[in-house]
Image (cartoon, rainbow, N blue to C red; front, side, top):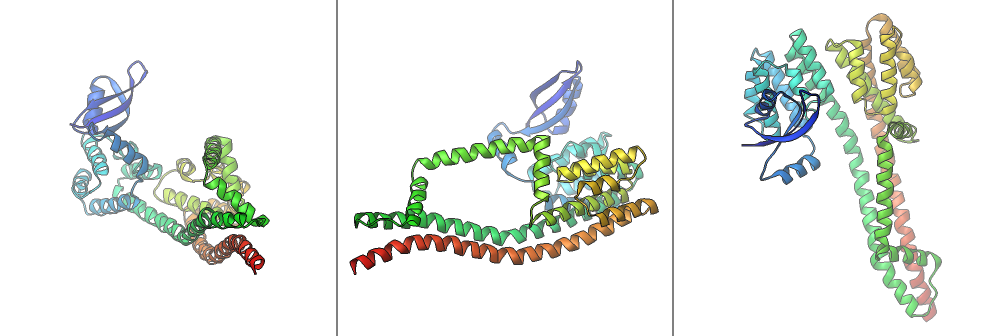
Length: 405
C-alpha cells in the first residue's frame, strides 16, 4: 500500500505534517478528514523508492505535451456527450506517466464523491496552472466544460509553439559557444603549458600574451580553480537569493527588459502573453477583475505583474486599465491606445486577441532576424578567442625558431 506525506491543519488551527498509508491520495485525504484533520497537501512517497521519487520530482520536468494531449482528448470526449468521470476513466487507462495517472485517479475519485472538478485540479499545480483551474471553474459554472477544455488546449498549444521557436533559435548559438569553450579549455590546459615549458628550458623569455595564457592555465589546472569556483558559486547563490526578494525580482526583470538586443524581443513576448492570456480568460466568461488576478500570476515578469495588479485595482475603483500598463513601459503607447479603444467599445477581448496575434507575428520575425544576426557574431567571437590563443602559441615557437636559425 502506498505511503503519502501530508501537510494539514487540525481542528485547533495548528499546522501538522506526517505520513499515512492509503490506497490513493483521495483515500488518504478521506482518512485525514475522518480524524478532523483538514489536509492542504498530500503527495505519494514509496517506502522502497522514496529517494528515487524525490530525485525524480526534483530533476524531472512536467511533460507539457502530455497535459495538452490530455486536455484535447477530454474536450473531445465531453463534447461528444460522455460524462466527466467516464471521460477521466477512459484517459486514465491510456496515460503512461505513473504520477500523472495517480493524480488523474485521485481527481476522478474526488469528483465522483461530489467535489468540484476545478478544485481537485487546483491540488495539482504541477500539471494544472492557475489559468487552467480558473477556466475549468468558469466551465463548471456555465455548463460548458468541454468548450473550456478546448479553449485551454488551443491556448496551451499556441504557447508551446512560441516557446519551441525560441528554444530552437537558441540551440545553434549554444552549441557554438560550448564548442568554443571546449576548444579554449583544451588549448589553455594542454597545448600552451607544454610550449611554455619548452621555451623556458630554451632560456627564452615568454611573450606577455603567452605568459598571461600560462597564468590562466596554472589556475585551471591547480587547486586554485576550486577557490574560483567556490567564489563564483557563492556569488550566484547570493544573487539568486536577492532575485527571490520582491525588489530583486523587480530590478532583474526591469534590467532584462532594458537589454539592448534582446530587451525588445522579451518585451514583445511579455506583452503578447498578457494580451493572449487576458483575451482567452475574458472569452471564457471570467470577470475582468478575476481575469487580471489570474494574468498577474502567470505574466512571467514582475514589472508586468505590478502593472497588471495596478490595473486590477483601477478596475475595482471604476477607472481604466490602459494607463498603468502604458506607464509600466512593457507595452507600447499604440497598444495602450488599442486597449483603451477596446474598453470603450466593449470589444476588449477581440482587441486583445488581435494585439496578441500581431505581437506574436512580430516576435517570430524578430526571432528569425536575431538568429541570422547572432550566429555570425558568435562565429566571429569564437574566431577571435581562438585566434588570440593561437597567437599566444605561435609567437614563442617562431621566436625560438628565429633564434636557432
